[in-house]
Image (cartoon, rainbow, N blue to C red; front, side, top):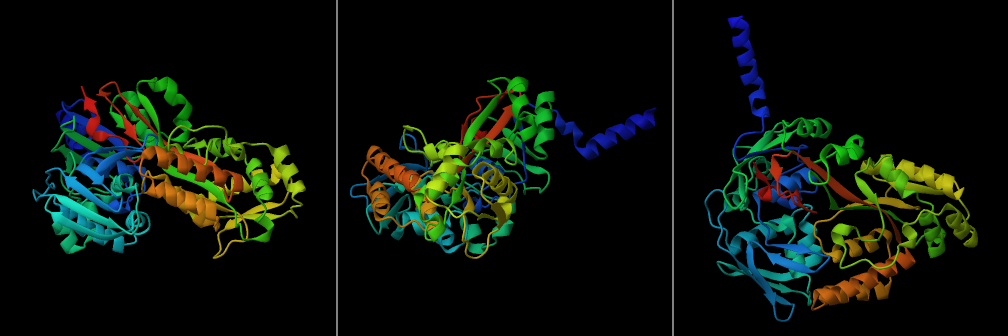
Length: 480
């Protein structure tokens, strides 16, 4: 019996099961998927944003619904003419003890702009600065190629956080992603362990002293939170979607908008899809609820507007008629436009499952032949588009939607440029809504869905809040 007891203790130590009890004072246990990368400028997945959101502090937070910017690593982001911008930094250090200076940002942004990372577009296509300099150790000066009021929103992008001089000198991005060094409220204690996770130690204003991040299957993590052996699960799979509301109640689960949306882009220069009546017919033939409940597994909301909630300026007004499912009206529009019938929906590999369901649904609802195929070099039919945003600025998404469809209307382009140059958030919001409404009328792209995230937590965790780019804000979660 003593031998068996000894073997049991050894097995417990080897498997790490002793750490499965979350009730360690000051320690929050959280379940996540394996992040694709922890290099902040190249993060696009929810798990990566969650971890880097704890390791780094962005210059500011931006709420597109109000246009409000809240400085964080920055003390202020100001301009008198919207061409020359000045960013004053708060005193801060990297986790390796070196100071975060204006030059840290300048040098990092040079690397990001030259790379093909997810956030490179923020600097090269959206910010478009002619010059970025460190005018003093705590002051960044940007000179743009045109007046823009969007600079605070763009600089709030989580991918524009600074990298330490050691990483910039080595250029070993793969190595840095395994042991990242940030400027945020938590540091990574040792390298990231693929397939297992990592431990975050508090160095700033976080509530938990330590955060134990565990990589695993979301369904299993959900059950662990329910059983009380895990504090927080940051993803809820589709099969648990309905149970979440009864298993955890309103005060122990959350849903939040993600910076991700899906569209059907029409080739507006193709004669068969040049008529907006045809495009509206196809839009009305899409059963978005069937996509949400089927291949998209309750991880999205059917679109109710062109811009997703994570990117929408101000209050939404009116209804989005092209977001409706009305098969009879869709068929009537195609007949009105004398659409010859037959179409191919093209998709990227990551969109295949829901694109094929979309094509089958269109075939049934519109009574025309619709098939689905992998996207060729140049598509002669509608294409599915799955967009992940690098910023919360509507300018990024609206310009991208026009680009993917080949839409070149001059009035739309002018409204977008005026919104970019607007002096106030209110003025910009009105102009963005004009541009959005024009896209809904001309419909070069049909909105399909917007992504959302789910989290559940135990009674031990409290003060759980979420944002589109980080999901649950780890630094704000307390444990009791």
